[in-house]
Image 1: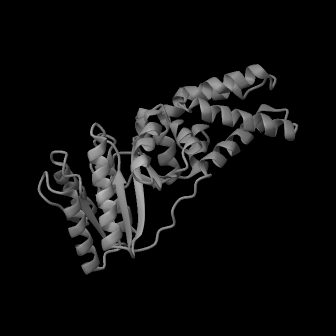
Image 2 (image 1 turned 180 degrees about the vertical axis):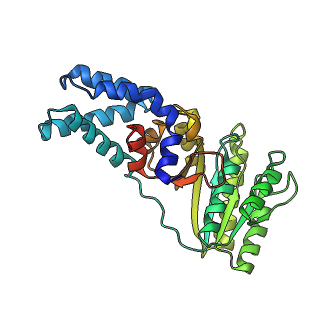
Image 3 (image 1 turned 90 degrees about the vertical axis):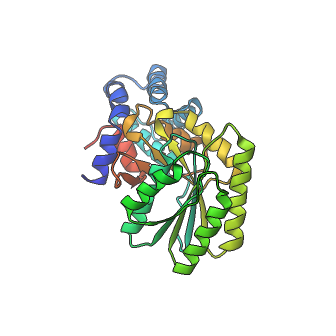
Length: 301
């Protein structure tokens, strides 16, 4: 199955929810206030936030007036272009090696699974990879990550449950440096009920990497569950207060009717969506591409 097919299949629930409304909206009729009101309802139904929906509609009205557009088909094309522009406003990181990616996110979003899939991607690209099991708080977190390390055929550094996460990262860096490993992926605790402890842990991990591995490229990614809709946006805000978020891995896009949240994330946060999960398989983590995402929303072949 090709990349576009996976994205299209993954967005089936979102598309099914809004396809009828979009098709009805873009067949005949005048480009009047009622049209824009209906378009607003369609976007919000797809879980695009009110602020991002307002921005989309304002841009669309401006371009329709500027280009003297009179047909709904032309409006459709301009709407797609506006969505792509919003999704592409934040540039994705260009990787340099050695590379250290700290992966954050609340429990239950598929963080460990995303790390395993990301490790598999790097290995298939010919990079050597080590995982650091620095979530020592959640029971069996290291065991779960070990399963993914075995599936992805990469190394893992872990300590016992309750160990110091900083010590895990310290040992992982020492191992990576001694073996000349290309990529270090750090799993971290996801609890938010004790934000102070989480902040202290993440700050400590950052300081250790800065001190022990200054020659590495540093990135902080957050994993978000697409099925949570607008709650995903607030999670980025919380973690961005603690660490600067460089990119987003969006999981469970294949199981939600809230795919429009991707536009909200891009529109309201200065953070790019880098990868998207569109299935349960180890290979079902794809580069996020705005044109394919928007085309899938409009049910195009």
